[in-house]
Image 1 (tube, rainbow, N blue to C red):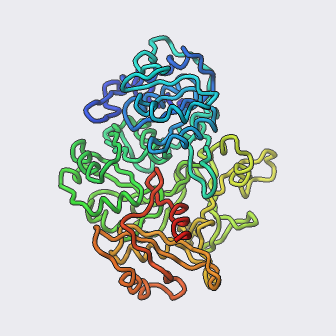
Image 2: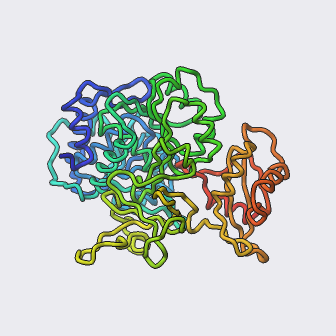
Length: 515
C-alpha cells in the first residue's frame, strides 16, 4: 500500500525499472534512475540533519533535478515547498520565511540574484545549487549521498507539501497538503483520465501550480512517461507533442486560446488521446476550435482548487450535451452545493461549491483565521459522529441541474452587482469569446455611483488584429440583455497574468480603477 508520495515511484522502479519516467530536453531518466537519485537526495537531507516535517524550498525551472528534489524531500522525511521561478526576490523571501524553510534548492545564478533578499531569513541554513557554484552553498553533486536514507516513520496524514497560492487580498497563503492528498489525488485523476503505462504526458504548467504538479502524480501512479516543458512559446508545446508523440495535454484557458491560433501539423496531433482544461472555465468558442484541431482526442473539462487539488470533471461523452458544465465529482470525492445557512441547494439553485473527502487539504500554513473561514464542518454529517469532518468551502458559486451536473456561475467575490442585478463575469466573457474578435477577455465590476457597479470588459484582439471597442460593443449588444452589456470596453495588446498563467484579475482591477 502506497502511503507516501515517493512510494509511487518506488513501486514503479521495482515493477518497470527500465521504462522512461521523465524527459527534459535530451535527458531521459528511467524509473530506476529517478528512484535512485531521489534516494540519494533524501539521504543528503539526512546527512545535514533535516528533521521530520522541516521544509525544503525548491526554486527551479522544470528539470529532472526538480522532480528528484520533490521525491527526495519525501524520502528524507521533509516537506517540499515549490516556488515559482518567475517570482521576484522579495516574493521568494516571503514564502521561504513564512513557512520557515531550512533548505533551499536552486541554481547558482538564481541564488546570486536573490542572495540579498534571503539574507534576513533566520531559518534558512543550507542552499544547494545546480549549474555552478556559489559562496556558502553546496553543489548538487556534493550534496547527494549514497548512504541508506533514514526512515522517519512518516504516515499518510503527515504533511508532504505546501503550495502557495495568491489570495483575493493580501499576501500568498500556503496550502498544506498531506501525503494522502497527493497520493489519492494522483490515483483519482489518473482513473478518470484513463491513464496507463503507455501514455506520454506533457507537463506544460508550472510545478508550483497544483494542476501542474498533478501531471507528475497522475503519470507516475500508472508508470507513464512525463515530458517536462518550461513554457516559453505556444509553438514549443506543438514541437514536443510531435517529437514525443504526446498522448495527454493539460493547459489553462489562456494557453489553449493561444494554441488554437497556431497551425498543428499531423505529427503533433496523431497521438493525442485527450486534452484537459484546468485553472478556469473553457470558453465555448475555444473548446469548439480544439475539438476541430484534435478530432480523435477526448476533451476533459476540469474544475479544481488548490485547497482540494481536483474536484470535478465532465465526462467527454457529455460534452456535446452539456458543454458549459464542469461535470460531477471526481472519484473518491463528494461535491455539495450549499446555501449560506449550510443547507443543501436544490436543482437550478445557486450555492457555494463544497468539497469533502480525502483530497481536502490540511488548511493554510500558520493562518488559523483564514483556515477557519474556508475549512468548516461538512454539511449533512451524521449526527451520531461526534468529531466533525472538515470540508473546504470553495468560495465559488455553482448550480446543479436535475441530473446532478454542475455549472460554474462565478467567484463569490467576483460577482458583479449592477442596476439591482447580479451578473456573472463568466457569462459576459463567454459571449465576448464567442464573437471571435478577442483573444483574451476579463469582465470586472468597478464602483459606480449610479449603478452600484459598472461592467468593464478588458480584452485583447484575436490573432493580433486591430479591434475597436465600438465594434465589439455592437456585437455584445446584439447578444446580451441591456443590463449585462459592458459600459466600457478596454482594448489592450495583452492582459496581465499571474505566474501560473491565469488572468490576474486583482492587478487588472487596480489598473482600471486608477485609470
